[in-house]
Length: 500
Image 1: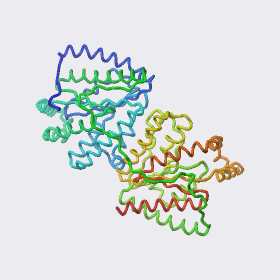
Image 2: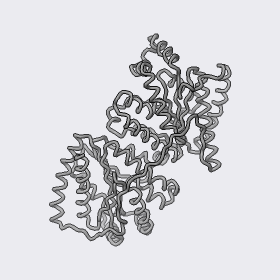
Image 3: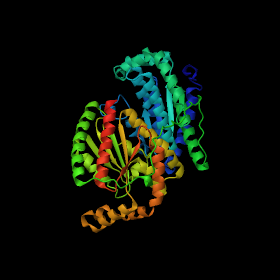
Image 4: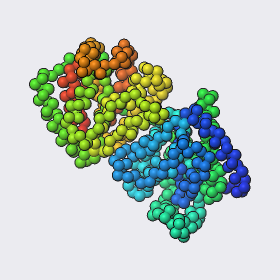
């Protein structure tokens, strides 16, 4: 595959002439990119000494520095190693209308982990699957991903490394990895070819550029980028799908089919379960004691715990979360209350604001409302188009699968109450001065849409209650019962994980 890549085609003067024309086109596209809110991610990978840095420098010459960011991802640091492996890339998502240029991307992470024996072949291929999911989710949300691999021949690589090492000014640029990349070229070639074959998809097309001739490489990268941006903008104007030109066959990638847990409709949940004050106090102390001990075990074993709370307005999520948090060492958890997204979050993929809030492994992240707003509030309030809502069920299952691959225990609660109980609690809040801040006009408006919400809630639970991350419907008319059930569910899930 790689040995068939064209290495040059024009003279230096011919390249320079075409480069100037392409730079002018790219400059004129910048305003359209801003106007159309098109986020562009450019990944640049390739052989050591293939000229990645110098090609990036050439690429950005005609771009407005206010609207692009160049990031170079080296070996993950201590914090990054304690997050899901894609975390640092997800946190780098550009805003709409901006460029993100990655000098080494999620592909370099995977290559190094595999080729230095940090992960095995099966995990490497799982990472390829994760990448395909990640890129597809970004593309579905409007991102344009342009992927480059700079290919140089072995002879050219030897020549460049020798030249760099011969000068005191440039020898620092060659490290052990570069020498290993050259020494094990056959091994790396097999890996790169499999990587390209397995991750060449319509959402993220590989462009392998012959880079022995730096002028030719500069021209080809500009041409590919300009044509990709123009094609995406034109397709959007015409309301058509963007069809890309590809050098290689697309990988046969099929969406994962998740096995679901059978869960009843919320209206079918019996809400007459109660605890006496005495039963509650006894069980609360016992549960909190056990949860504290389990938190310490999770910390020692670096097991992350992600707890998701959803429920009706006034269902008691806050009080439930408080009893869980009171059991925990405050240094080992964070409660994340999720409100309406701000303008910076709205300008990125909707999962971005949840990626950035994940705590380290061994810690608890407790979400008070979650990514499920995408499939409840947003379609009901006409914030998000129905086709994107329909895609979100799969995206959410995939996101939670990534968390579970990371090693997380994912626990999801729907705190359920009936309409009469909600009214009682609304009126109590409204008539109690110190609680009035808890009730808003929006709560009353949402109450009027109870039946609509119920329909969306049932669909949400049906489509996202996977075997690995099932929903637990908590009977919430009695707050005491709800708190104990939630804590017991958390305890059971962690004990199950520790026993594996």
